[in-house]
Length: 273
Image (cartoon, rainbow, N blue to C red; front, top):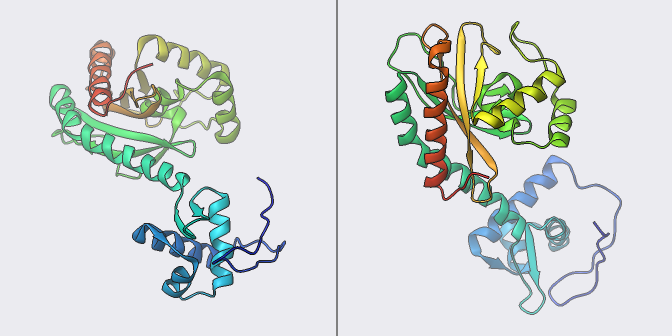
């Protein structure tokens, strides 16, 4: 990104370049306050922002330019007003998509739980982990439980493996280099070549299995949910004790989970690649 050049512009004070990074918590807090203030008002001038936020105009201008450089704010030279930028829209859109898939998937997950008798889950990928965002628990006394917000390693999770399978080779290698392949049980796939082979098998059949790879005695069958660009943005699964999910039902559950994921995909306007 090019260095910022400050010029004398109507409504914008002269600034001087500085090599001092504004990365401390206080600067971040002030920048977020400005971002929130602009969002609430749709557009604001430097003077109004300075008065509303209770900050010196020079400080406000420096933070506004930083937010502008990263695309969170835009400045209109003619009106001399600051408005929300495309990057803020993109991030907000990402959150909206997550909420949409969770809300759309809830009743469909419930139907999956009723058909299989096992806990139905939804999770997304975040920073190389799988994060559970919704769950419909089985009525059985012994059940799988993932509190919303729970993180898990992707290679030892049914949903995580379903999402990893949609990475290209370079993406998967980069993920393994960053996160590693820790071993949780004797069934955990901790060898890179074995994981690559597993990913190919998942893509071929359309669903993934966690075969006691995170917790002994527990199995999970999962499939991905796609957005309108054919990208895997979430996954759904059924999970439960191995004694209730034996080998004899894996294919049946795999088909049901795949159908469930496809239904959620359609409900949010997505499409499988």
